[in-house]
Amino acid sequence: MFIGEYSHTIDPKKRLALPSKFRLELGSKVVVTRGLDSCLFVYPMKVWEELASKLGTLPVGEAGTRSFIRVMLAGATDVELDSQGRILLPEYLKKDGGLRKDVTIVGLFNRLEIWDTARWNKYKGQAEKNTGKIAEDLGKLGIY
Image (tube, rainbow, N blue to C red; front, side):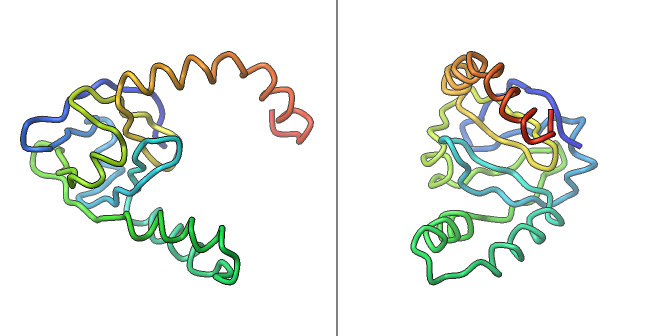
């Protein structure tokens, strides 16, 4: 399980070291794709295969579904972790995520998210203002 947030930097060769505590669970190869809210998602191969299979069963007759499938699958790339636990971020994903040098890697149960640090701090600040309301709504669903 992935949890926590970690500050890292993208080097001049567009390589990013993933947190060492996650590397065993990630394995030697991961999938990086466009995420939601202007970040990138990183999935272990097994989790990605399960997600891609689910996306493949969605009805393509609905425009919104088609768009979501295209964004997730067309933007995806599989990358190998090097001996230092780094991945190479393709330029198009770096641009899509608005990533510069300083990034925050966030562990979210079965995936990682890569955020530009300034954008993460802004997003987190706004989200924290709403946690009481969100917890209340989840409580109504029996989740929290």
